[in-house]
Length: 463
Image (tube, helix red, strand yellow):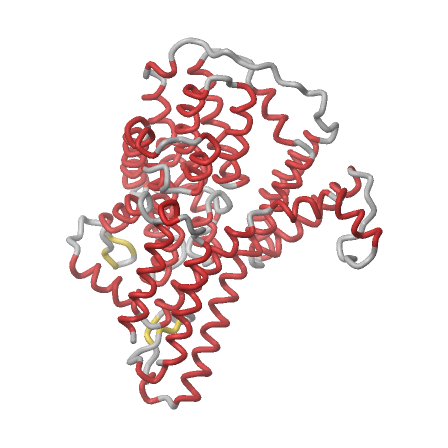
């Protein structure tokens, strides 16, 4: 039965990877794969020789001696445990997405356009790379990419020039998201899973992430594509909301407040995110001159309000397919973890792959495994890769392994345009060709990735 479950997972994974070829949204195979895997576990619960205790992060003793009813009860408890952990991530992401959409409702990101006062291509490159690096650490790399490419489309007429900028924005956004607990879904997973803390994540990964952004941008500055001046379109600010700057800074500040709230209260991050959302939503309702009606849905007044409320409007704009995809993939990986498959795979990796000299808390873990994970994230979605690593390794909070995984999974996806959410959305917005990106940008991303990894390996010996 274990072999059948693994086959189902692999087939679902292939369907997710080949999303653009088979023309089926990746959330569909993710949800189907999750449901089938857990159904097979329920049907064959008596045939499994082992069970993984996620709480103790070890195989459960005497599992084979338990009766059928006891095993079913254990499976239900495990399913509920994984659903709770997954829900923490999803509710957190829902809150963050809604705040970003509220900022956009007030055209808050138009404030960023005022930073661009030059026509020189290299200066514009550095402005966008720095903005992508900083913004992705606050509002996540996917949203930062959407915002900056939207701005780019409004100020740069020439598409052939825009796609070069878009390629470097992808690299910078993924680099910026790696050192922040709210900058990338995979880093958020590690943070919520108590594998990394905000302070240590910043200390260990800020410099490697910065190098991962700076090196490709520096090399690109000498390329012919970034020589000379650009023809810049004038930006019309007549339709800009008078509250746009206020909502931008309020929204960004509210998201940054979440890690601070977690440190102070030790509550899960989604609690702080809901508080931040409530505060931002309050000001949004006041500034839009709308009545408070967030819970009433059955009156005509409420229907009318829904058309004008920034909160309702923002909730209707969030990426629900992405949320469902994360639900499916995380719960599917949880199924493999519960059967002890990931734990066994990690043990075999440690035994078979040659060690290249990283010693952490008395346990040797190969840097090669983590580097391969980073390269693999360019081909395969990094969310399940990190989800699998959570079930594979037993290292404690802020072990250097988790920081290296956060860096590799966050930045490695830049090497292919389909390797990260930022790349996929840029591909859609600018219709960037896969092979153009492979030829023009991938080598820059690879150099940045390896440079940052080398810096991380060096700096971890200092801190």
